Length: 120
Length: 178
Image 1: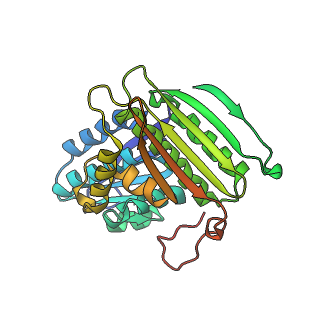
Image 2: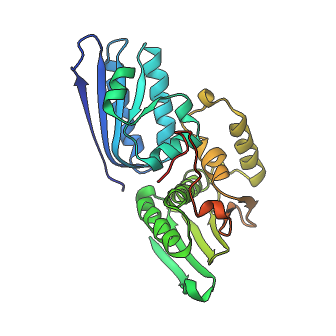
Image 3: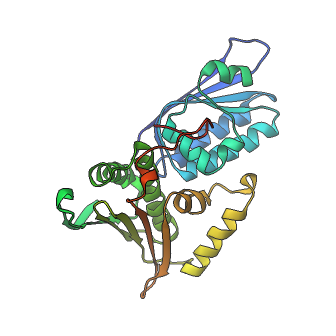
């Protein structure tokens, strides 16, 4: 089974914004995404309205199409609550697969966490 | 993971290489198959890293589709890697069909076409693998019915295309360079 580690925290740099940061490390694939996704749904359900979510993908080395499907669903749920979703620091192979399925047309990708915070 | 047969050639001798791997229908083994695919691409082709990662995704998506949609519990799928050095690399994935909801090749092709035409925000969790990742990152895609049930999906990437050896240059930040 592929290994995936995650952490969820509140970003408190800017008190005017409500931002959650999800840091992922490892590979997200068919073997683990169905176990991982409910953690994010739980986070979204407990978030206040207008909360944005930054996914820090710096440590993510693989992403399959089903995982992208979940990210699209996270996007729908987060934006429905008035928040934004941003993907930060993704490796080139991750950006490439997000690009080929058109996900980069829905979700902004940033090179740095600072850019992501500004967009949130 | 159980290797049922293998024939390794030397790339310098230009002999075709065929490796067959029989997999239980459990995604537990897929990270190993991905690692193997990267190693195969590095040893058999002049692909850039970008294309090596792309082909890794293609193999992963093909196998996952066969496991989820073309197999039952305790079933097996067969993944065949076939490479003619400096000419082409071919991946064939064969399944036995889903026991309660089997799909034939025509139905799968129709579903793929529907997904290709779907708006990006109208997808369910599934549907992007075949319609985008496999279709856009391979040169030839053939889906056929197997005589005793199940599907045979064969993808080919031709190696003698110069564009796969170098990464496209562009000012567009979406044109990714590895």
